[in-house]
Length: 484
Image (cartoon, rainbow, N blue to C red):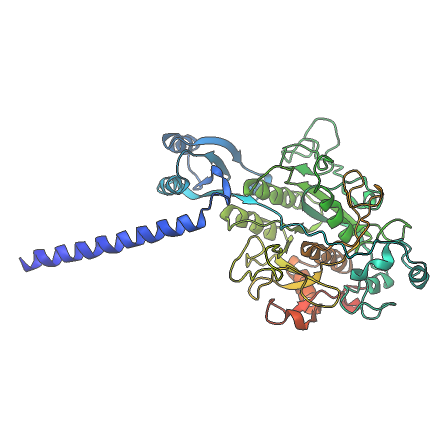
């Protein structure tokens, strides 16, 4: 009798404990799975290596899963890794996840999270940009008309001095302007690649000319200019969408041609930029497209293109598939430069240590997360921060940039340049992407880890960043580190 009572007691305690765990897990799932976080009903399902395809399909069919797409990229193939299915499920997504994860052959199942850019901030300083004759005479080099207003490219020893600029002009004086043999990928809205100040530094894929054939065998027919993962075609620019100019703005900070008597100067005057489009004006960007965009870049690197970094200012929830793509990029020696983002709901941004976003908050060896700095050395308005995740800051306010001459209401009569300084903390990341190019130009054999270390070690301590970033520093292009 005593033994029976003892066993009943153990059973009851075990049942209570399991019930409590199940309820806790359900609560956590409900908290994490907001309807606005993912595409309705869509899941990413990856089966264990070696699982028979017919078994996988049968498992999905029995749970009424409709296969939208099977994602198996060239980078996955090169890394000998499994692809994943994009599956549409009926009913409650938390229940669908629980059901799929119970399948022994399933390695991973997660929502197809929505990716988005930080809220765009267009702040007019109140001053229309004009070329200042006195300033132009003072700054004879470079001769780009809008350069006198580009505080972000000067430094403490410049004339006039900009104590919190990147010091790029000092690197140019050593003869380092970057290199046309070094590539960076721009994941975002696409880029107006015919812009007069960008065209010479935009990548073309000589291995896949426009002939209707996938000549380089990477799975993308005629990706001569890059690829559009939103519309699944090779159109990396579309003038129909009003935020398309963001690509040109970001690209101009990295690599607008300098000293050509046109528009603005970039940090690098020689570079090759690969536009990769994941946004087409629609309401939702799936993380599955983001994964494919990263893998596209990795495969290009594995196929011989000298890609040093990926530039991105997009954010989403934590995703295993996204993390795997970033690890494949790391294996290919590619840095991933991520914006810390900004929050237009507050004046001070948010602490990412408390409310992380991804990929900015992955602690992977190839991640560098960047927040915005203003011209006075303070954290940019509305810019996010985080002592655990944000590495450093770079200029993100009052920047003069190139834009889309065909579709930008803030440009000067369609000339391809903004008519007032832009403030967007996400632009800070482009400066650090360009720094990767300059370092690689000086040190052609440098690894991703070495480039990251050089950038962080040469950065300058900044009071406003102390205690709210990993380094407490801002980007500084030291001629001894980046100059020839």
